[in-house]
Structure formats: structure tokens, C-alpha cells
Image 1 (cartoon, rainbow, N blue to C red):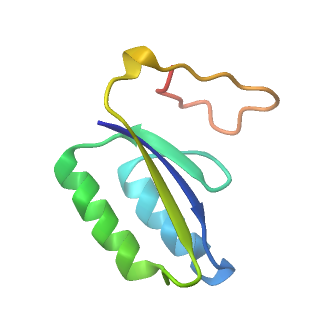
Image 2: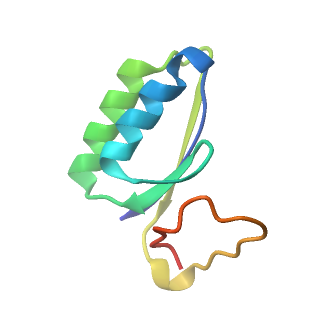
Length: 87
């Protein structure tokens, strides 16, 4: 499966969340990562994130894309990470 992660967390936890996320998927731009991930790793990923954030203060969004052939992405402006896999 393919996921897009968007996060809005307290400054105190931003680096921790980013560090965890980069173990599983690719950084794209500020507070956005994406990548292919197995169901098992996705579950591990969520456990690590839940242990790190404060749900009453932070927000994590996972967009789950089951089939990339029906998706596309368009960029306007600079591309912050050129290691893109999403088409």
C-alpha cells in the first residue's frame, strides 16, 4: 500500500515524528512524507507515532492509497525532495 503522511505537531515533537516517519517513508516537504509500506510496517509505524505524540495537542493524517494507477500529482513551485515515487 502507499501512504501520504501529513502532520501538525508541537515544536517539541516535530523532530521525533520526522525521525520515526523517515524510517518508513520518504520526506517530501515540510510536514509531508509519502511512500510504499507493508501492512505490518504500517501498523508498527502507527504504534511508534502514537507513543510519541500527544493526541490532545497533535494531529497526524494518513492518506492510504491502494492503487497508484488511478492517482497523479502536480507540483507548482519548488520541489523539496526529488526522490519521488508518486506519479
